[in-house]
Image (tube, rainbow, N blue to C red; front, side, top):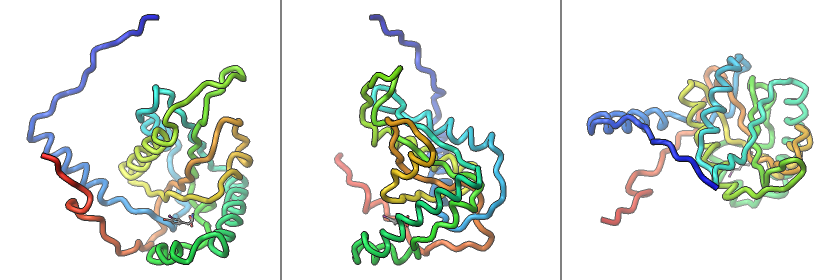
Amino acid sequence: MEHKFIPYQQKELTKEEQLTNSENFYQLLDKRRSIREFSNQSVDLKVIENLIKTASTAPSGAHKQPWTFCVISNPAIKKQIRIAAEKEEKENYDRRMSDSWKEDLEPFGTNWEKPFIEIAPYIIVVFKKAYDLVNGEKHNNYYVNESVGIATGMLIAAIHNAGLVTLTHTPSPMNFLAKILNRPENERAYLLLPVGYPKKGTEVPDIQRKKLTEVLDYYE
Ligand code: IYR
């Protein structure tokens, strides 16, 4: 079998452009914060589609692109998801999470209540495809968690770049999402992200990012 290759084209930047672009992109993403209180202000669906197109440019194992992004704006479905998520989260906070875990979460003021699921104009539920189903036949996917994690990271960056906010919400266990959204048997819920605008006057925890020296080791 012959495999076709085409020339790779990317504009080469000057050293100065490289420095300013990398600095500007860092400054942009450094402003991103996880937001837990949303406004119900609407967002153009075209923007959401652009965000998902961006996420779907992510590299993936053997280019299998093992993801589906479910975009939910239907109030009845959002309500169903909120009720199911809160049921699991109540159990987590009341019984399943260790004391040290809850202590670690204290600075963020989280609890089992997830009103943002109904308030935000869009909920994106990211599904990973454990395998592909082609005419009922199972086909392998590779490095599914890595691939979907990278795509989700790019989605989060794209959301911020569009002037919107999100939260990486991890209801657990989250098999209820595949049921409510009627997903095929090869898909597993990966992450839930409300997308929209922050509630006016919302506050974020006063926390710092690790310094470069704490996250970088040189080998020269
Ligand atoms: N999934 C729960 C708990 C939670 C866990 C971590 I790790 C966080 O950084 C935040 C919350 C919830 O979403 O509330």
